[in-house]
Structure formats: C-alpha cells, structure tokens
Amino acid sequence: MKFTTRSFADFNFVRELPSRVFLKGAERSVASGARQGELVRKLMQKYPRECAEQAADKLEKLGLINDGEFADMLAQELYTHRKYGVSRVKQELLRRGIDRALAEEAAERLDKDDLNRIILLLQTKYRNNLGDEKGIIRTKNSLLRLGYSYSDIRAAFESIENESF
Image: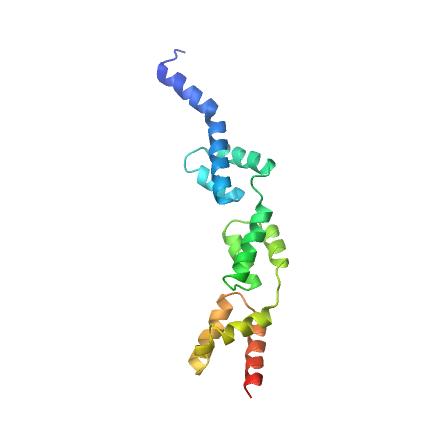
C-alpha cells in the first residue's frame, strides 16, 4: 500500500481524534455544566459516536460531569423559579435526557408542599382569573399543566373559598 500525503494526514487525524474530542468535551462541560447525554449529542455533531461516548465517559470519571448534581440543580430551579409541581419536574428532567432513576431521586428531594404553593399561586398569579367559571376552569387547567395533582388543586380552591366567607 502506498501512502500519499493525504492518507498519512488522515491517519494522524484519526489517531488524534479521541484526544480532540476529549478536549472539546471538557471545554463544553466546564462552560455549560453539561450532562453526559447532552454532551455526547453535541459532540456527535462533529465527531463519531464512539469517540464522543469515550470522551464523555472520561469526563465523568474525572468528575467534570455529574448527572446527579445537574438533576438536583435543575429540579430545584424548575420547582422554585418556574413553580412546577413534582410530576412536571420529573417530566422535564426526563425530557432533557436525565436517567429515570436520577430524575425520581431529584424530585423526591424537593420540598413538596404543593397545597400551599397552589394557594400562593391562586392568591398572586391567578388572582384575576377567579371571577367567573371560565377563568376558574382555565386556572385549574393551567395548574394541571404545571404538574399539580387535581386533588391538591381542588383542596386549594376549597381553602380559598372557605377563607373568603
């Protein structure tokens, strides 16, 4: 087999590819706090799947990527700032590629005072929607989409009605 300049350059590129992918992965993980699945998906845009997975595995072993910490941080952010219920938090974590077991563990560590959170939302965000039946239905549907259970929503509405009398 005759080596040309082009084929020799290709050989060096292939040999150096895993280290390039590792460096690119390290750069991305430090910059964005990425999780392993997301990092592999981003690296696969430029590099072969095997190299991307190897780089992500190395970064995880070095402690630069930790899906558990990422899941806890994201769950807390969704729960406190976006006011999602526990079931919606789990759904979002799964949608973002977090392992089911990690998503459930992260959701279990949350505060879980849903009834008081719903009452607070009804007194602040949805206060103006409670004047007519159509607004009440819309508010209930919105709370369901946020991941709260119907029994908690109903109990919160009963509590608000009892307070107003």
